[in-house]
Length: 304
Image 1: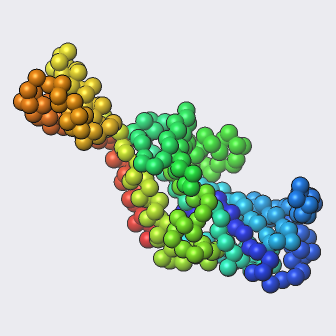
Image 2 (image 1 turned 180 degrees about the horizontal axis):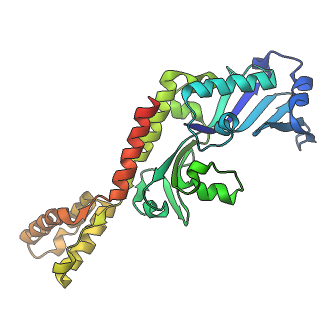
Image 3 (image 1 turned 90 degrees about the horizontal axis):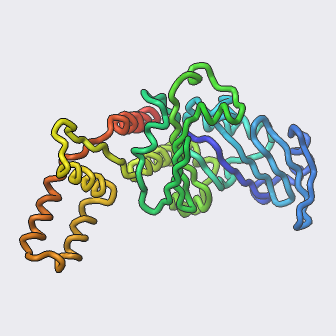
């Protein structure tokens, strides 16, 4: 489930005065830089991970999944998470168990029945998030977290990545939840540590968080008109049904209450409310959303 992450290990936790000289010798493409604050940094890579070293500590950024599997199409299990951290510690020759997690991405790739772009329309608004629709993706952002859906194969091709053959000709929809900052607040912990990543309770909690964030997205429904019986009257009803589907029936009822003085009689208000109830059967759940719902829930069963 885990993909990109950002790790910070401070000098005090390292308890290793020699790391400033030793670790840079282990990096590929190592470079030296002096920033505007006058502090010196050594930057480089361990495989796909970016490493930055200073007198304050060590920062690590990149995809843990790619680090272990060489791509992020495969699943990264809890056991593999622990093994990948142990591998990283061995390569850097430092302790990371008590290092802090500053960013964490949780993601899964789904092989869908239809073209990925067909699913975006049915992913509606999400409370406390700003929704941004792009040609090949849908983003939700609230400053602390970002959730996004996109075509993983297309994204890989654009970035020039090697795509495993099993995925290459498939409709691959990726759902990703990014915890961008202030992780302790979001997870209700004093600190989120590297060791938490493969703790069973924390691991299950992050999966449930990922699933619940998907459930919080309002799913747009299909209008279900009987075209053979379509008239000017019921076509307006279908449009009203679509409006109510988007904004909610309670919104429509509140609107009637606020404007009831504009009606001739209270009976007209009652008739209008009754009409709202009659509109109930004019939409249906999209089979595309049914498919995605089922795949999301199966992920929970798999990782548990």
